[in-house]
Image (cartoon, rainbow, N blue to C red):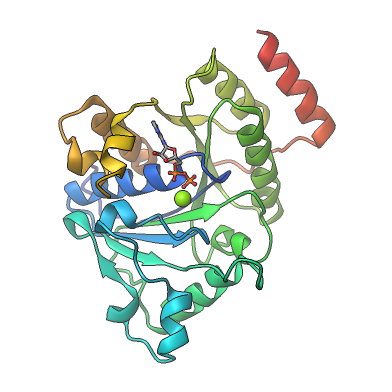
Length: 273
Ligand code: ADP
Ligand code: MG
C-alpha cells in the first residue's frame, strides 16, 4: 500500500467508549502511516494512559506525572519515539478519586503548544480520546485548533453505540467535522449492518471495518502492535486498509445525533432485522 504522496497533514481525533478498541486501532494505524514514511504522532488522551504501550513496548510516563517532578520539561522529556519512529505522548489522569479525569488533556495540550511539539512537519496526528463523557478536557481535541476531523470507534453493541451517539452530540455542538465510524467488530450477529444503519441515521458513514482477531491479544501481551508482531497477517492488512481510507477520505459531515428515546427505538429496530 502506498499513500497519496501529497504531503497534506491530517489531524484526526478518535473517540469511543472505554474498552471498545481505540488504543489498539490508533496504535496500529499509526504504524501503518509510519510504514509509508509519514511522520506520525499519537497523543493519548485517556486517563488509562495505555494508548502508546504497544508502540513503545512499555507504558510511558504521562505528562501529568512528569510535571509533578519537573515543572519545566523539554520536548524530549514528554515526547517519546516508538516503533518505526512514531512519536508518542501520554497526557495521563489524576490519582483515582482525586480531581477531574479530563484535566490531563488540558494540561497536555497547553504544554505541547508551549513547547511547539506539534509542529507543521508532522504528517499525521492521532488523538486517542475517551468518549464515555464528552465534557471538560475530553472535549478539547474536538476543537478545530487541535483536530481537523473526528472518528468514532464502535462495535454493534448497545453501550458502544449509545456512547457513539453521545459523542456525536459533542461533535455537533462544536460543529466538528465527522469522518465516520470505525466498526471494531465484537462478533455479534449482523454487526456491520447494524453499525452501518446507525451511522446513516446520525448522518455519517462507516469508514472502515476491523475484524475481531486473537492476534490482537497475542501482540498485546508482548506490548506490540499487530503490524509489528504479525506484519504479514490479514489483521495487519486490515489496519493498513483503514489507515488508507482515513487518509484518503475527503467527506465530512456534522452529525445529527438522536435523543435517548429515539436511540432506544432505533436500537430495538436494528436488533430485530
Ligand atoms: P480502548 O482504548 O478503547 O479502551 P483497547 O484498544 O485497549 O480499548 O481495547 C480493549 C481490549 O479489546 C484490548 O484488550 C484489546 O486486546 C481488545 N481488542 C481491541 N480490538 C480488538 C480486535 N479487533 N480483535 C480482538 N481484540 C480486540
Ligand atoms: Mg485506550
